[in-house]
Length: 293
Image (cartoon, rainbow, N blue to C red; front, side, top):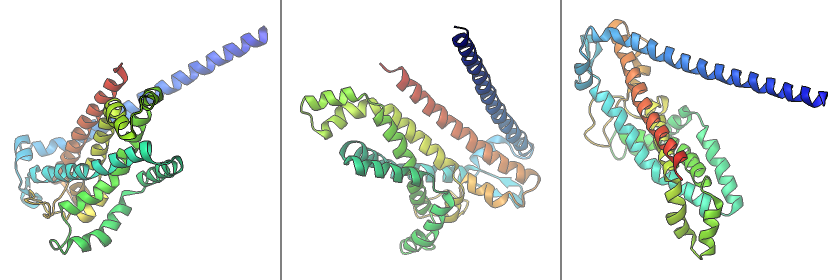
């Protein structure tokens, strides 16, 4: 009895220490995030003494040497490339998830899932290098020099498609197997089960994965910088070069001073705020999934 009581006390102590350790880790993460936000906000503030916020967000004139820091064209470039990538990646990612989860034989499904997970972990610079040496020469035939919003969108779509597929597979696997088996017992085909049983229950999780893939696209730097063309203007077509907020930071931070440097931090703050909104929307959809009956 004494031994069992000592073991019980030891387990309770271990659980208490684990709970305290996890709480401390969570608090530390929150404090670090708050510190980063405050730091970027403070570094962004000086440019507002030089240019009003409305001018920063509505002007397309980005000429730091002349003290002009309009971010609208760069912001439009970021959003255009990200949404184009999502538009291209969503059909590919969802079709792959549906095939692997419903139609593929077990061995092919297992191999395919491992391959998708490996692709999701490939560094972005590898995709950018592939786009630069393979895709850009092809796009030259459409519109020289080949670096454009479309090129960046294709490269970015290939990057985020595995992420979207992974989240979609997780959402589909969360559907109770008993529900799927009931559909099979009724003689429903795989396509009908997918449309009428799996998709309605997995939709919130799929939407969450889609939003998180969009957040990743918005924050991407190297791959986009290598193939987008990096010209500051609002694109008139898919074949026009663009510059994104993240690429703008990477290209100019090395020599930026004073208000110019502050304007680049403002670019980073915009990326952070947009990403935060997307992640919060994804979390809202996830909460809705958890509360669903």
